[in-house]
Length: 413
Image (tube, rainbow, N blue to C red; front, side, top):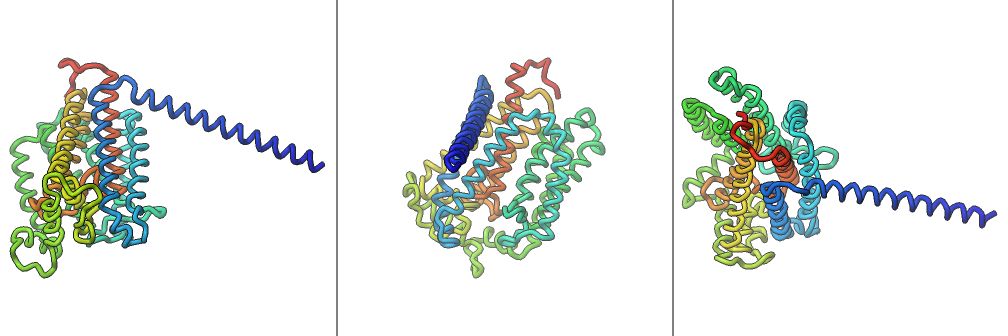
């Protein structure tokens, strides 16, 4: 009797093993088929863009590991804690990239409204129950994960504005129907972020939205009006907080007395570049990351790149971002309607402007704004939102390639 039960149990075990093996084989075959279809016979721009994104994310992971292990050890006695979070975020981000790259762009257009409502609701919740970091109340804990909803609002704002412009493209000569309402649309995305204290993100969003409008055909007289309004509003917002006001005054006069150490971060960032010289001190060999530069793995990771890889490495990274922008411009020129073109240009403006601001801050060309370096800086929400944006752009390029070369007759405004 016992032998019979043993044989029956062994039979069940073998059957369950066979079922598990069959499921694993089916999953492997489905995954293999997906990637074959995803990468098969795409355009040169498609391969260039995804190759650049993968390479830059790889560089970012390497630099986050190097820049963060000191802070990780000090925080929780685990040198890999920040790197592990960034690695997981990159894996999830690439899954979302592949998913969005295969979804119809019209589906994304239809879903932007509900997604925006959810994201804005979470951003408002941040103001009530969010977590404050360095004076910015811009994070919220959801199911054990810390999320920064403003990063996703950047992408949703770009998609929403592209859709708005597409639906009213025949009324561009009527400011009351197009250009004035767009100011309210931009405010809907930007104001909650400003109320949370994240002025750097708000400035990025405002500049990106303005660049999209100008690319779509914003009249020159309104360009001047909006530029003057922004020039008046930004100083008011920047000087409304004592910490921001102190950082700006210290940036304007770096030789003045600095009892609050507002220039500590930027000064040591320049020291990092000076130590790196032309070729750098070597990967992992930075000395300034040993508690001399706050947020070394985040907002000031470019300083660590300059120290460890030197001027050559820093310039190479800048060139990579320039090539990334050029590839996205080429994709925008291949699109057939205003919605897709503005969407691609919006992502290009976002990545380029944010990278410029981050690098300019590290080089003391701008005051500290707390803006991460896209695809490089530590931060799960930033990396995930950015990879999702590239997924949308890749999806548009897949459509471009499937429809064939653009001819003047087929291009629609």
